[in-house]
Image (tube, rainbow, N blue to C red; front, side):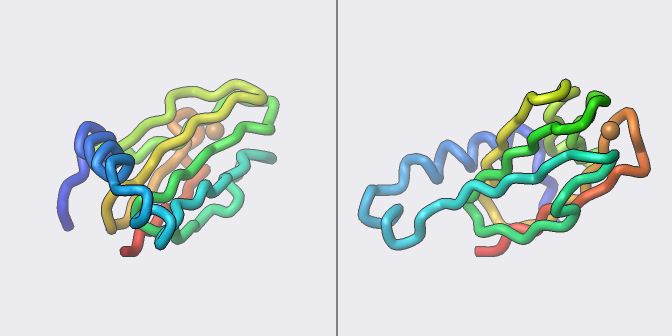
Length: 113
Ligand SMILES: [Cu+2]
């Protein structure tokens, strides 16, 4: 599988943003919310379309993050209670991620065209 660095993900996101309005209307991007609560991601496994955005919202008392540890493709950084972080996925692929301080908290994002 292609290695997605964080830089590539962001660059691809910018490419998606430049798509003409007509094309955007044909395939509107969706924002998906992953809630972090009770030491878990919900939904833990999420399938989205290329160009969609995922927003992680921490509703827990503890600070958590969403970190793609295998290639460091993305890292939200630590989110305190009530904080959120959004990331747009510009290309098809799949990522397993975990919370950096809590290695047993795991999730996945699958991006389809
Ligand atoms: Cu955590």
